[in-house]
Image 1 (tube, rainbow, N blue to C red):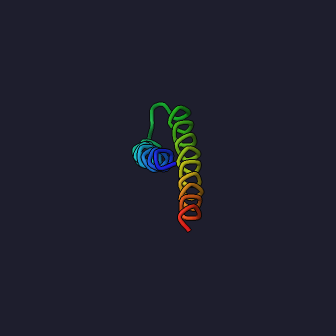
Image 2: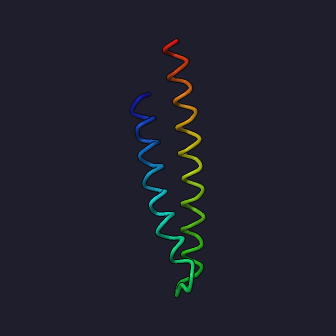
Length: 65
């Protein structure tokens, strides 16, 4: 369970970095549709990783008690 939580947090960091880089490319981008799809996919992946990290953390806290 600790590995899953760590991978979820790592995935959140990586998708957050991709999201930060891709938002800058939205302005005057030569390949507009691709950047929009990358930004949308990064946003969805970031949300999934964030929710997973919260759920796994609560499960780990519940096991300790």
